[in-house]
Length: 118
Image 1 (cartoon, one colour):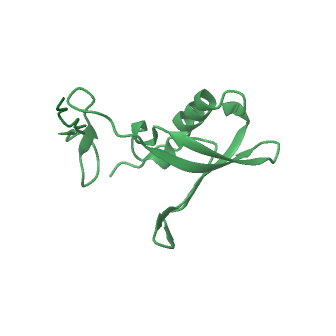
Image 2 (cartoon, rainbow, N blue to C red):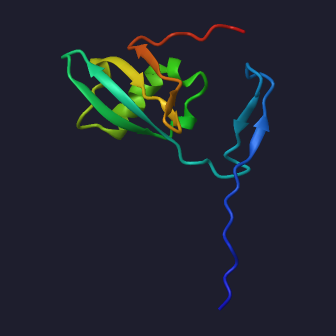
């Protein structure tokens, strides 16, 4: 039997209330949300350092590296046996790698910062 190819579509919706030069959001109603993840190095109050993969990274509203309460809650939800959000001291967002060159390493403390209005 002949099978039609399956296509997955991701649709962006323009949202002029969003800051920045790309005022678009992923539209869950009109398409599929892409899978996304980022590697994190988490430092706990005890001084322990541990690497985690945070799934569904793109579901965090931009600027993602400043939404630490959301990141901590997601980590605790995804790793309930290993992460207690109240014990997180620091989160390091590991670099995206373009070839052999790290691009965009960000370190954030445990307190959520409010994005500046631009």
